Length: 192
Image 1 (cartoon, one colour):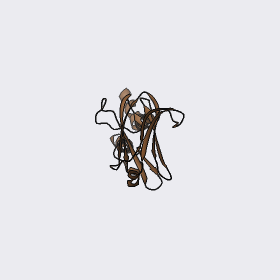
Image 2 (cartoon, rainbow, N blue to C red):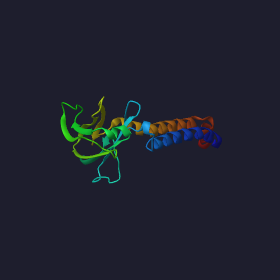
Image 3 (cartoon, one colour):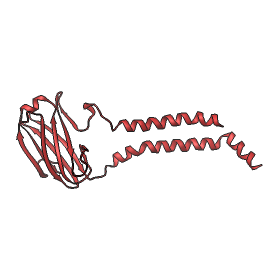
């Protein structure tokens, strides 16, 4: 009986640990190419957006999912050196259209030789878009959708799929153990 449990338990434990470890790594440091806060235009032109809400969580950094309403500091890193030599501006709109939706914050285009653009805005619950525009030929244009204080059901589903699979595998394992011949023999010997 113990040998059967060990034979069936080791693969189940291995699968559960692989799923758990995979979920833990997904939230660690990622390569620049895989960073969801990074935007690339062409081969070299890249920018990185970070959002901070120090009044809520002083050390937390966000990108497109802002957990709370309120004052939000936006920091855009101009990764590409060429972007530091052209005027870059930022527009934050409530909604998704740069032309039709309400502008919440506007930072006029200017030069940023240090490669960092800093701005502050106040965000209520809802959808916003950050447009980063560079005045060059051809013009550069990046955009970031922001979700402020909104539930992201896709992330909840992704986070729950590992534990759900683990629970199903453990249930299958328990079912196999309960239906095994040795378990049935053990039950019948206890009844007699």
